[in-house]
Image (cartoon, rainbow, N blue to C red):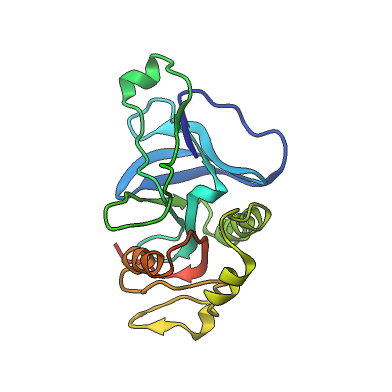
Length: 211
């Protein structure tokens, strides 16, 4: 599930990492800067300022919604996420009116198909040195929240050491799982989901993901 809210309350428990002044880019749209909280139960971004000067929305992601996360090196260092949902932000007018939480539930069928929407998120830290810690915290959160629809056998079947993956000019290093094309990670990810026919969370470190 994805929740977008006009109010913000910092997580009080289970915080694995928090990085202030983290820029959020959704697809190719810069949203603003706020604090990123990676917790044992979810990922929260909020308590900052939008690009247009108003308070930023608060975005909460449950781990099963996150289909893949990686370290992106270009065009700017960021924690790169793909969620299996089309994230829609409230308009400035609805934010200022105090509309409260707007839960955005996934459809019953969470598997990628040719028509299912997805959203790319890039969390750009103020300090590039925080990037590795962000990735590690995200990996820990994913481990604590395994996909209930995925069996251990499926994990082993789709495992590939990222150190063995080198295609074109891009490399995925030290990846716990990687079935993406370096040329187009999202397209390859969609194709993989179609082939395997089940939900899978991907962890890919040091990915040079082009625009």
